[in-house]
Image (tube, rainbow, N blue to C red; front, side, top):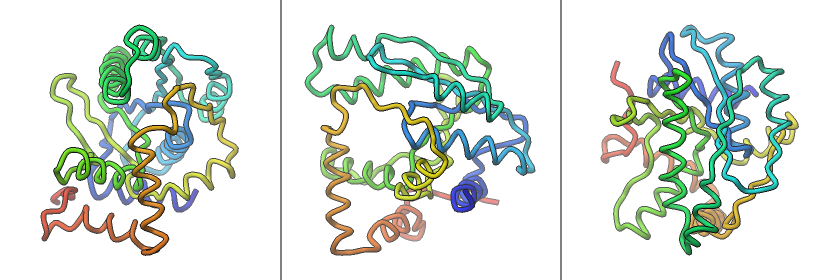
Length: 240
């Protein structure tokens, strides 16, 4: 966990992700990324100079199978409260509307439901498990499908809900997440989404893998580009 916590601390220092007294809701989808984030934030609070509280939250999609018993056990072991909100988002998208391109609508509906849940439990911040490779893939999606240079921010203030969205694993490579998920035996829940593995994001993941075969340090260079403020980097560090 040393590298995981090191990346988390670096992100916290660079972008002021967590402040004293924060109530952070960790969005737990059941995937490796969000489970490792939950584990890391539970450990980080033990030595952070800024005390904060954690609650793990999960939105069900109305799709089966989706067994959360392993996640409940993990939360008990980490001494983190766990809240599950049942939804019909998956059924609405795939059965009622029969969306051919479901990802955008699904993300919008999940954001709204997650924001509502966070407000209900009194959280002022929501932590998501996006990592370094997710940021680069989002950059590629924006360039190739929207014609703009853009990716998500490590910190986003959501004015409508009053929440702040943070991504503490923003510096962590996906390969290390895969390694730690296996080492820690995290209770990963397979995604029941019918579109899983067949999205444009998966295409970008495959493209990035191909690029790295020819340019092995491409991921590191692309991360540096996101932070290169002298050349209008997309991630501006917290001014101190």
